[in-house]
Length: 248
Image (cartoon, rainbow, N blue to C red; front, side, top):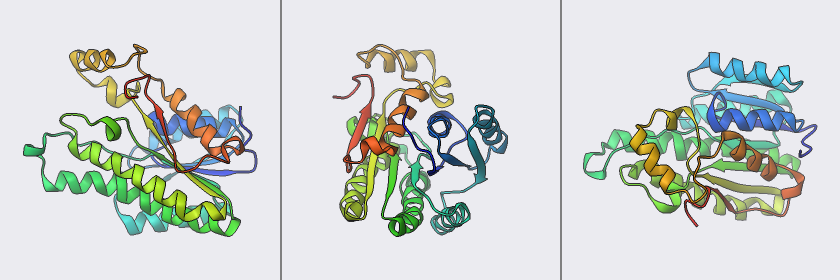
């Protein structure tokens, strides 16, 4: 277990799936966790209760990352209230699936609004206290589809691929200030979203995974905790693929 005692971590989209798992493991490592949610307050409060039951410190706050200015101001306010921010896990994301010929401009705008602009807004706000502290960890949650593509997911794949460029650019911009910027690119993960897939879709996805099984959210969260730790202090600008061999 990595030691994050005394650190404050913000996890966007932290009420379920990978975000919740990340919030739980960061709290187990000793961090004070602020997890945000867009709509499901009950799920967010259950995540907080789970963390507190294990002796961790957590709180939940509503945050709509689809609005750039509101997201930036929201993260800035949370960081100010917490007295600083050491770790940002930009996890909040959406997927609107369609072939390009059927894709609406509004779908593209919504996808990029959350997955790219929302992540950038949160990072912009998080950078300010990190720059003052001359230390920080920013971790973007991308996807294997940003690396390999996925038929019917052109908007989602493009948005997740955009985070690779964001990661590498911010890593270069802020390395001299002690801030590392990395991304994780999960493959097929067992979440509410993938549980809703048709059996044939699940079988097709599993067939593409050499390890023959989906990842658990906890397996993705463990890598996030590593990138947030002192042990990963010399890692920046990297995309950590966690996909069971789905893309090599």
